Image (cartoon, rainbow, N blue to C red):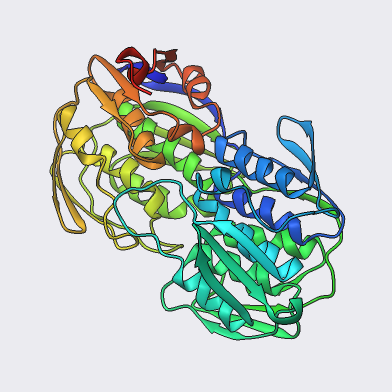
Length: 431
């Protein structure tokens, strides 16, 4: 069992390089199944969710070749199965993207019910199913698998209106439709940067997708996709997390390899808190020396404030002067981490979808446990800012989405290290 030991209270200083976007990579890798050729994908983040996606591809019969740490070649011309391994697929939410990709290419898919982080809310795939059904597939759940099959192995065009703005459904339907007959329209589509990145990847392989980044995406089906090269965009949420860390702990950092436009929603709120953010071509300079100010946050689909940054910004606000309100409007309940912040001295009350955050003078180090990916990032931020030593367990959640987080923080001057402990179940003779 790995834990992070953090001695807080040290301002951060230095430069941090942002990796490729997790939320783009875990869709683009399954999308390679649609390509009748070799894909060379660059800027691939070294995180556990990506490793699982690549392993699933290999089990389906794809050729996976690592060129270097951040570049892979994927050859899906000899796929021998449309059924994903149960134990692998059930471990990550992104396994749902294999449904759209397999269905689009082969007319059928069997994928284990997706897993990943459970942060208290329900994460249904009903909008995915609505899209697949409109395209002509029959979708059932049998033996823990979602089974989708199209008549005669072909999907057809459809006009699909999403009842709620869903990133996952938008991307999954896009993948299913690129090889379908005719023109498909997705209305009320998600506009997140990783939706645009997936569309750009598909287009670079020969697809005809227009309108990504708006609420209406139009897809003209093509006969085949061929191979090519593509580089994944930088990770908006990883960049935001380091910005929040500098805001909470103080100091000055240069966040490198980013698209500043993607950061506008996060930058604006940090500036309201009194953090100085200077924008350059592909970097942001983040500086905080004065006390933090209160502000109010409401999570919204892009270009609004991202739900994946809500735990991190709440941690920052726990150290701001005054009372801040954080409203979660994307997922019904994403406040499981609040109890852990309270262990460190935070004053936060949760009322349904709203957290009332009363800023405190300082946080204190304590043993805490990550409950999901972004909650874990929030606890790391809290530990960096806290007085004393913190011990963070269940860090496998954090490593699902942050490449080399310990090493990157160490280069910024943080006193953090990963330590191996005996598994608590083994210590007790369990398992």
